[in-house]
Length: 365
Image (cartoon, rainbow, N blue to C red):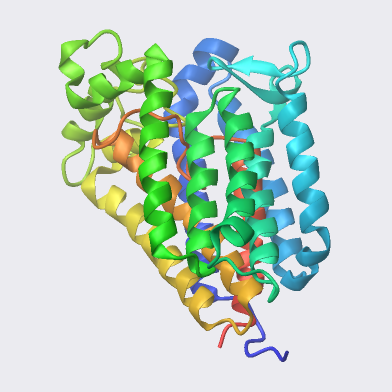
């Protein structure tokens, strides 16, 4: 296979750098009040974000210059390691509980989320597995059932933490790969019905999830409880108007919007930078997703195509769900906005995955 492009996709690279720069600025603005209140340092979150961004950019540089086909050699071992970490994090005394979920491994405030590694690990393995000619995904019992079992097992382990947001992104990106690999619509339709029933069961099994659903439908029915996050987020977006209140001028970050530097950072961005700022961010994501899907459609081999579908799908699902929650179109799920929200594992792994996408772009027609 010969290279058809000597350098990575410039559009994708510019979108990554643009979104990352906006994210660093907004992490400082949104997290400065909380950082000063909790840690005595208004730069607490942005300094850590710069550290993780540096690590992520280094990882992105490596993966962007590493032939993507090399991942076929390590996909299986990587997935096994991800499963081991998902089991270890559930052990009391080893896994750390943050935000009500036992989803962290590490010491003190430094830690990693095994579920974030599983998202990329599953994408790499499924792309490799389903691209093999001997695999016939059009059959159910001898084809589709095996990857579904694998995806379901990983989703189940993540739900034991519990972390519905990350689990949903992993599941959604994986199913996009399964669909792109050629699974029959009849099988996927039947699975969709089963999935809806299972999703309803998960919601009913945990009272806090049911409260989030009811809050999504009518947040003002419990404005100081389950509807508080959505209401405060809307209170931030509304006054932003067309041009925003100005960078650093948010009122909702003063302990109104919970954790404004993570899941609800887009509401602070819309408050300070307005509709225009929000649309710039969405436009950058749209360009990134468009160029990524273009790579998936034009790269010569099926492994590269499925890998691009998985990475782009992971980004698109996170963006849709995060912004959907922030503007009140979806229930609160606890998903960060890629490259914008504060985070260690999520930011580093996202940049690593985008480095792979940049490498894929070198081989696209």
